[in-house]
Image (cartoon, one colour):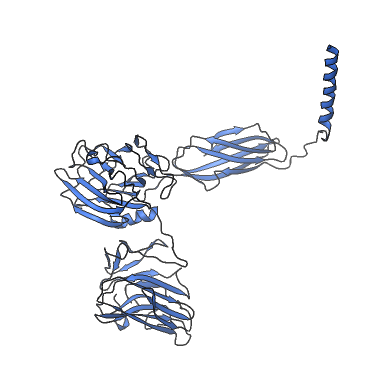
Amino acid sequence: MKIYKQLILGIFTLFFALACNKGIDPISSVAPGVDESAPVVKITYPADGTEVSDMDTAVNIKFDVTDDIEIKTVAVKIDGVEIASFDSFKDYRHAILEYLYTQLKTNGDHVLSITATDLEGKSTTTISNFQKKAYVPVLASETLYMNFDGNYVDRISYAYATIVGMPGFSGSGLKGSNAYRGATDAYLTFPITNLVSTEFSGAFWYKVNASPDRSGILNISPVGEDRTKGFRLFREGSASAQRIKLNVGTGSAETWNDGQEIVAPGTEWVHIAFTISQTSCIIYINGQVAAEAALAGPIDWTGCSVLGIESGAPNFTYWNHKSDLSDMDELRLFNKALTQEEIAALIENDKPYTPKYDGEVLYMPFDGNYKELVSKTDASVVGTPGFDALGKKGQAYAGAADSYLTFPTAGITGSSYSAVFWYKVNASPTAAGILNTSLTGEDRTKGFRLFREGDANLQRIKLNIGIGTAGTGETWNDGQQIDATVTDWVHIAFTVSSSHCIIYINGVVAADVASAGGMDWTGCDAISIGSGAPNFTYWGTCLI
């Protein structure tokens, strides 16, 4: 029996030996050849020019090394200090390697260098310059910034807020990967050291959840029902509208700012800001003044030690101003009362304007400033123009005697051209320029001149375009009259093609005139807004 088992084993051993050789060429030794080349090193991450978040202390370095014969060693350095080395490789001719470096604590520029050496001592060093980019405050007065991208940290001090309850994240933010999402009995607190002064402002993006029907949003308040110190920003309302309100303590008194309603529930991000100067407190919604209230004196911080975020807690929970279930993003605090222009800069920083229409090259909303949002540059101001708080949307440009704006034409010209705007005519003076780009002197063969003429009751919107030297060199469009006694906004547009120029009023063709050519911009280096000045002041068209 024992002999039989050994025989069977021998047969199977023979079978496997035959099977292993069937269909496979036997392995044979090959001479490695001459080592002709130094190793090749390719850095995959961080590649040259990479920006690493200032919140990251760890960076996963990834790289490939190849050699024609055999890699001997690989050394990894950051800023000249060796952080890792390798001398054993699965594939000695092509090594795909990575190393998690967890000590990248310093913001600023860094140099990653990787040196590979082969058996004969030939080496190659590849360098990648990368940056751990620190957050740069949008305004010099900024004292706290929390973007809620998966954490509750202040990007200026790198301090973490204290978490109460179980707040969460929305899964998407206004500009980053996340935003704060409130939860029942949940909020954040943060010490106010280095955050406050005799002036104060806060700004954030907000997507309101109207349930519960009231809550705290931000507060720095003393213990108990004492509203003579600190401030309380909160909301109250219904399922369809929530009013943003502010209470400020000035020591012996309190001031109420009843703010303004926003639509609830919020499906779009709304920008909320409030400013507290030594004489007034203002609430802004989407950059516009919602309400302003006078203060009896500067804000008093006595007894205030902690900022509450997304709740009235810890000290303003009375009247049911408890946790807010809304979304918040891009929270910033400031140690001064921001101007409306500074608030507009915050909005532009967080949500920069992108052209909405094909061919759009210039957009000026006149919301407290004269900034052109496509190029993000300011127009030049002549005289003392102003703003009308009741614009068609937000604020509006308000003309004044001997006042206008100019803006360079570089990058915004073309033989075909269009302009559109909302207009509320003031018939005094009875003739004025509206928009123009024109040569000096009475030369109308270049550029364009949009203007109005009439009387106290009717004003005619007219257009003259310069077409160079073809024909008469200019084309006239006598447009149409608008009622100067009505205070409604009127939509004005004009278009210039190679064969026609058209004026539209409230979207309807007012006048269509054939032209011998498109617009000629030669020598026209600036557009004037709100006047015929500086070059189209003849015929009394210098003022809007």
